[in-house]
Amino acid sequence: QDAKAGRAKASAQCAVCHGMDGIAQLPTAANLAGQQEVYLVKALEDFRAGRRVNEMMTVVSKDLTDADIANLAAWYGSIKITVQLPAR
Amino acid sequence: QDAKAGRAKASAQCAVCHGMDGIAQLPTAANLAGQQEVYLVKALEDFRAGRRVNEMMTVVSKDLTDADIANLAAWYGSIKITVQLPAR
Image (cartoon, rainbow over all chains, first blue to last red; front, side, top):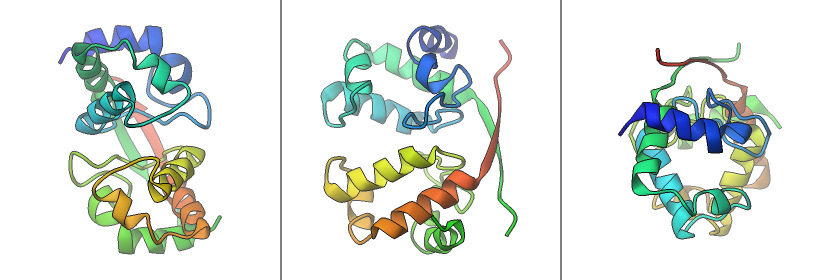
């Protein structure tokens, strides 16, 4: 995986909806920041194969290579997240 | 939505894999911390309806009510996340 190549690809194809930092720009898109790499690879493979369907992702995943998928997952997975629970 | 009810439900049914704080406990599970509420509702509805298939989620979503789904999405969505990009 090449997170830097993933960063470049994300900038071109993913960031409009998912944000360059993985914080989604619209409510129907998932935050991807710090998401598990294995999970992201599966999600993209499932969209590409039609096992998972989404108006936008079905289209944009179609032309991704296996390397693109690995790199994109490496990029978004490499963003560090810290969490803060709401007060009880 | 009742995030506190969602917290209780999450503790019983989701946290083993997704973490009480939404940080996944195993690589195939998604982090849910701070995930978009609209996205989480759709994900759970899709699993429940069989539009999205996953060995674990297909089973555990089956008995969720609409209120459970709204509450769980409110809980995980209410966790604040901050992101830090990797150094270039």
